[in-house]
Each structure stands twice: as C-alpha cells, then as structure tokens.
Image (cartoon, rainbow over all chains, first blue to last red):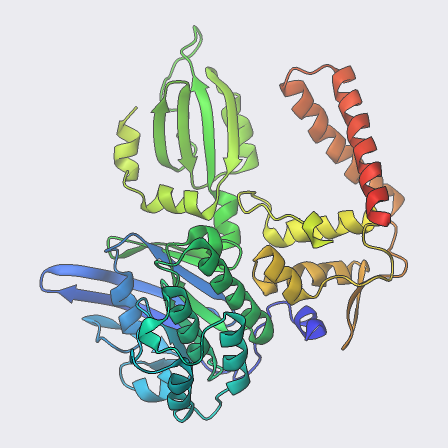
Length: 326
Length: 135
C-alpha cells in the first residue's frame, strides 16, 4: 500500500481512464419562481481529488448538490456523473456514488447492523469488514436503534454505509454540521484513511474550513448563486495575501489612495493604524515596488488561511463597498 | 518523530513543500536515522490531517532526490547514505538563506552583532535538539 501510494502521487485509481470526470456541472441554472438559486455554474471534479464547495447559507449549495445527485432537474444546464447525464441515467450512475447527507437520516427503529443488512443486498461490491471496523472504532452500539444514537454516531453510521459499496465518488453535504470538535476531528481523520486506502474522489460542502484545509485539493466558492471562484487550493493560497501598511501624506507625495492600484484588492479596510487590505494577485516583485511607494510605511504581507480567503471572497463586505470606505 | 513535523496551514508555502522540508531537516539532524523507517503515507496523513496525496507527493520528491528509499511491500526508509548536497549547491542555498535573514534583521533595526548572536544561539539549540533525538 505504502509503496503504491508513493509510486502514484495522485493516489488516484487508474480504472476507466477513458470515461469523463467523476462529476461535472455544466452551465447549471436553478430557478424557483423568480429567484435564481444557481446561475450558470460550471466546474469539474478531478478524479482522486477532494473538491470542496464553499458558500454562505443560501448561496445555492444545496440546490447544486441535489442536481448533482439527480434529485432535482435543473432549470437549464446539466449535472453529469462519469461522463453521463445524471437526470437521464440516475439509478445506474448513483450506484457508483456514496452519499452522506446533511441530516443523518435512516429509519429510527433500525439498528446500525440492520441498516447494513438492508443496504448490503443493494450493492454487489459491499465491504462488510469495513463497516464492522468503522462502527467498532467509533463505539457505535450494535443494538441501539438509529433514532437513539448521538448525532456524531449517526454521521459515522451513514459514512460507513456510504463507503461500504466502495464508491468511485463520495458526495457529502456538510457532514459535520452540529458535531462537537472531537466528533468532527474523527470524522475527517476517517476520511483521510479512506483517501489513503482507495483514493476515492470526494465532493464535499462544508462550513468546517479549518478541518478541510489540509484535505481539499480544489475549492469552489458560491456567492449568490454564482461560482465566484474555482481553483486549486495551492494556487489560491499563493495569490491571496493580506497587506497591512501605514498610509501617510508626505511633502513629496502627489497621489493619495491610489497605492493599491497595481493589485486586485478584494477587501480594503481603514484601521486606526493604517490600511488592512486583501489582494488576490500577490507577487513578490509587485509587493517590493509597493513598499517603496512614497508614504507607504511599514508594509507587511501575510499568507491567509482558507477561512480568511473565504471570508474575503464571500464575506459580508463586497469588494466595491470595501473600496469606498476609504 | 512526527510530532516534530508541523504543517502551518496559514503559510503560503504549499503543504507538500513544508512536509518535504520538515523531513529533510529531520534527516539532516539525524532525528531520522539513515536506513531507519519513516511513517507510512497514511499514518503521516492522519497525524497531520492532510490529504494522503499531499504526503505522497512530498515522499515521491524525497525518493527522487535519493533521501528516501521505497521498498516494495515493506515501506519507506531513509536512504542508507543520504546524498550530500553538491558543494556549489550548498553554497548557493546558504547564501540565499543568509540574505533573507540579514534583510529581516536589518528591517527590524538589529545590529549585525545582534543578528550574529541570535544565529549562534539558534545553531546551539539545533545541536541540542539533534542530540536529544539521537537517544
């Protein structure tokens, strides 16, 4: 296993290389009456990657997930799984997808064992041992009905059921919502284990940005139904920076307020000590020029966490309004 | 061992590069002994809570550089004789690091004496750390 993972850095399963992306959204629009939940959204989930869709509540995530799983017909555009339209071939395509829904939902009177017995019959490639292992590791009692389990245990039962058929794609809609920090931690650790073992492609929506930070390979940010951003985590983190500086009028300074013009500033805040800005196109050479501008003092730039980047892109202050606060 | 490896998610340095650097450092200070085992990709991924593909990428680069050897079915090990950096390459890397440190010190208003004594102290701490690891 170890040597295999090292020899194929992507850890992606090599099966069926000829078929399309495990998941793809093409010009997807969802309208409810006059409200548009998703507007012309397109992106693709790379095989073996962990695509993380972020967005504030009401940004259109749930509609998009429902379309991806063929539970809802988009107003226009389409969702595809493994190169085929989900809406047209739902049953066949969904057999290769594991789903962990936002609300852990299963018949409340059935025990974890009974649920597993029921699901086993539906899938040809059911891995019983993995279910037993997972439930034992998280101390999910075998004889307690699902309805009486804790929220964390319910989540583990559903993750176990989603992974047991050895899916090619795992779709999770905010799977750690409402879990305490310990349960959240073990949930993501469990996911890392599965990635190490099988290199399963993952599509996840979450608000737990701190936990997903090291795991996500690509991030999409939905804002008001539009895809504001769709990018590899590595490049995203290299171009976003926070810049803080003192802004002084000097005798020789001819212009004031235009010093950030060479950058794409997505957020600018005036503080008592100076300016606090977030730029989306940071480069070392540009910053060197910037700090030499007459009147720009003690300029510092710092890298940003995924959470900070998300706040700057999707947070309450739109870029235009931020610019006007000066 | 892995508790000496840290990943800073808020850093601009990619995670795979931080892991690669960390392991180079541990090998360099003999905290990871030549010929000894390194944690498996999945163990390290779980400990650091990062994507296994990220750890695999770091290991792959270290294996390509001759620092690690992969023995099929057994695991990943530190090479019996990790390659020494070519003299010219080492000089270049040292010089770059020194330039960065000197400009940091200067921008903080430190004297060259301050900077040198901090460097000496850091060097000393590094030595003690390596000794502790060796036991």
